[in-house]
Length: 369
Ligand SMILES: Cc1cc2nc3c(=O)[nH]c(=O)nc-3n(C[C@H](O)[C@H](O)[C@H](O)COP(=O)(O)OP(=O)(O)OC[C@H]3O[C@@H](n4cnc5c(N)ncnc54)[C@H](O)[C@@H]3O)c2cc1C
Image 1 (cartoon, rainbow, N blue to C red):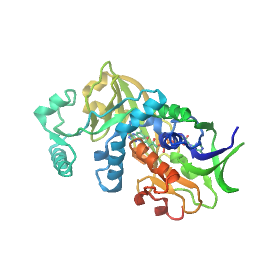
Image 2 (image 1 turned 135 degrees about the vertical axis):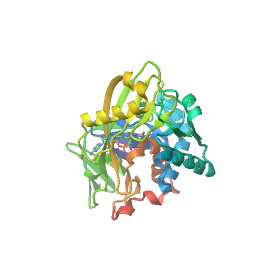
Image 3 (image 1 turned 60 degrees about the horizontal axis):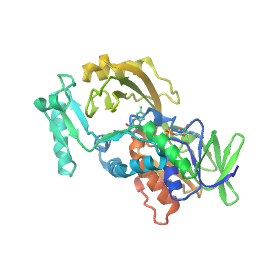
Image 4 (image 1 turned 90 degrees about the vertical axis):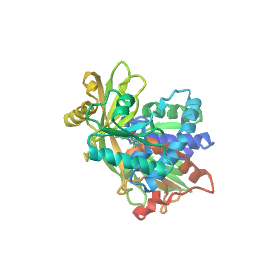
């Protein structure tokens, strides 16, 4: 086997696969090293929600990056689908963030005005219209903020498509755990237990496990796991028309009647087990918002470890300590949303002289990386 590539990507989650795809599509020889199977980390648990104006409400870099990435989605999904031959369910039905008391409703109404003032289509939906907009919502819901540009993608389908597209573009996958990255004769050497591979550039995209990969003479990247549990229900037809964001859970209705109910947020180290408490809390929360959900079938629970950084922004950029090493990790709650933009930023950094660095994502904000 050829042990030398242009780029080695460590980690086959949505971030590693999207970066590998963008590089391979543009002619680079790419090897992805994944310790389990592509997409089985945080990515498989994701709700695939694409909602910058909820997730990035605090403003700042996350909002800008998330909106930028969402704008790429309309082009990204058809391209990956065409390159792979895999269909990807990607819809933009809008989000409806709901309020259960007057005070919360008035905050949502103000938020609608604020969004409109910044050029984002949004509106507050009050009681008579609310029942027509989402007929199965609980009667005690007093209003909602509708953002029509928001949507979702089925993250599993997108990762499978990326994997197939990668292979079609000549990329290779190697299954095994990367232990260490070291310098080695004009390139970087990626060491596994019983093998090693060389490349000019190595991208560290190992999600929550990124800090566990040893990098020669460089401190561990500060990423910690935040466990998320998500339950999956099914009914013969979709219960909802929009993605719903409630006070204690969010709901993503797929076209086939599947309803995703997310998500817990727990400090549980690297424990990827589901818990009775997590499932109970999510089931109670969904049935409070949509009483019909008590009748839905229960088809499973998924668990993932969101990769969180100290400031909750991703780390994307070149190492200042080890030439050839690039970080692409720490996407926390928004890795699916941010994948297309991250792939473009990293591909530009590696393949073009005029890269588009985003200072807020610089690895060096956390010291000597
Ligand atoms: C319950 C839940 C709901 C979510 N909902 C949303 C959402 O609605 N929208 C959104 O945008 N985001 C959402 N997220 C966040 C999103 O899933 C993550 O940000 C994203 O999946 C991170 O992708 P990643 O590729 O960085 O990490 P991962 O998917 O975890 O991939 C990292 C990969 O690296 C591999 N790896 C690790 N160490 C090594 C090693 N040493 N050698 C080789 N391989 C290694 C792992 O096996 C893994 O496959 C959610 C997450 C959870 C848990």
